[in-house]
Image 1 (cartoon, rainbow, N blue to C red):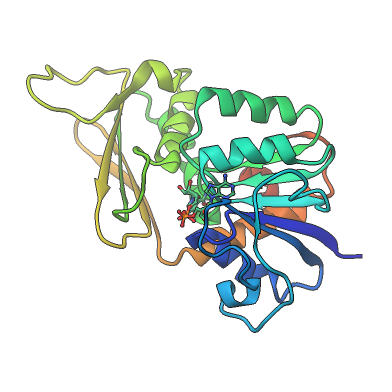
Image 2: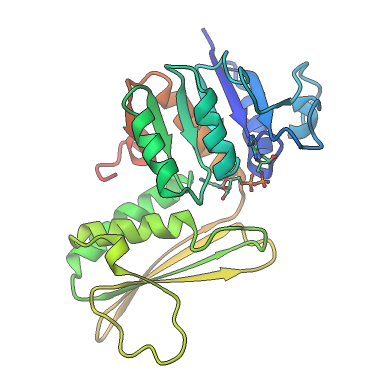
Length: 268
Ligand code: NAD
């Protein structure tokens, strides 16, 4: 039997791409497409949003009961949208969220929910980035005295910096060296900064035009530099990763998962 799925942030750039992946799928039945109560797209047919023909299901406003029918929900909205969703989710409903810019309160609420239901949050649903994280952790551990700097570039509409993916890459590198990211992150440089701190990871955010998402990790020693780079070329790759995660998580027990679990990678 098909699982019942909801999409939150359905009228956004990512939400539409998720709908486009889900509409042809026989094993996932879209039972809710939810957006902000003030959205101009409320009431539109989901097929029109996703570049398909009419589907007989319209976009509804976030609010009580909006995801009551769902076995699993994919969320690409805003931190406020995710916070509101956590108030609405049915008891055992699985959650896949790609929303970035989460504060500590939201992170705690997600951890608390994961004790009762399956939760998968990923700052980047590209499978290539999941492999990149794995490679960065291995390189950081194997080259312990090399400096690590992370440069990311995104489109001009992106609201948070550095990207959630850059932070996840930094966390992987820091963890591999027994550091915490909080203690070692260095966000940009300006003025009389003094020499680089050895136990630090540098972050640099570039914004412009329509860049989908690029992450470059420099691992720099005295006489050589290793660069690990990923470029997303089409946002559909994130939607495909999120749908793959939703198919996988819907049958999992309560717990906190990551994309590496879906892909069967050994690190997380
Ligand atoms: P967008 O602004 O195009 O879409 C956001 C959508 O959320 C809009 O439709 C808006 O109406 C809706 N929304 C806002 N508040 C809401 C609420 N309270 N309830 C329900 N819906 C609400 O943004 P986007 O480019 O689609 O990105 C959405 C989020 O996903 C961002 O946080 C972005 O950084 C993140 N993102 C993550 C990945 C990933 O792979 N994890 C990839 C791309 C974008």
